[in-house]
Length: 347
Image (cartoon, rainbow, N blue to C red; front, side, top):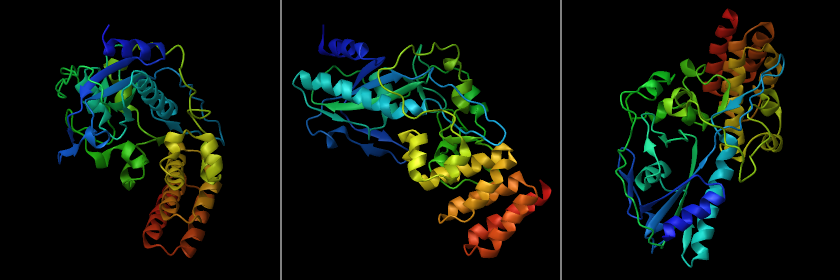
């Protein structure tokens, strides 16, 4: 049995599903050809080990109730951090037990590394997938001085054929061509904190973090079998948190309700995203909480709260916006409030 075969068996026994090996040669990513060199992590690097953990089947969405609207995360958000940490720790432990050096390579382009290592292929939505697991794969990478027999397959490898389901499902047009992604149109990028065009704010629906549209329609993700057990604890109590407490609660209360992966976006960005989700929920019970958010310190939160109040509409909404406009000094936020007042008059 080769060392790589031993590693795969070791990883499989600890809940990892796929393990591949790529060379430590530099990666070129992005339109500008950014060079990412594994040897900047470990000077003696000879291999990059890529592990994938299958993360499908734990979500149990809870429906919203009147007065208690809920948000949602994109696929496997609660498994993201623990799965990645488990993968890196498992591979590192094996290599170190065998006398090799190992360093986490989470800064590497993980999808590119997975394709290069032979464990996955690119989809036209720029997400990788593997037979039997679809795109429900949390990836991790470890740079090592062990020579494990790199695959180094071409990263253009794909088996999507003529299918364009993901391109057609993208609500923002971020997927305008196969294997091409317009970063500024990604819902995921918006929910990480990028500005969200006013005309597009209805498209994320009740999403608080990440996106799901292209993965839900992908043929590779149909009829998947849920994972029967987990080699780590899932992060966070629910996949569909109540939105109003997230908007008005403290950062500590947010952290108790959300996965660490979501909290890494920052408390202010979360409040902004929650305000947008409340505007899309259609429940006017959210207006008092949004009215309170019109007075917070962070201007992007105030601006989104104004949009949401205007979208929900009603007399209480108009009164809240009128009060906020009287005291608002920020030019951009004033513009949002004025536009929201016009929306509220029509709602």
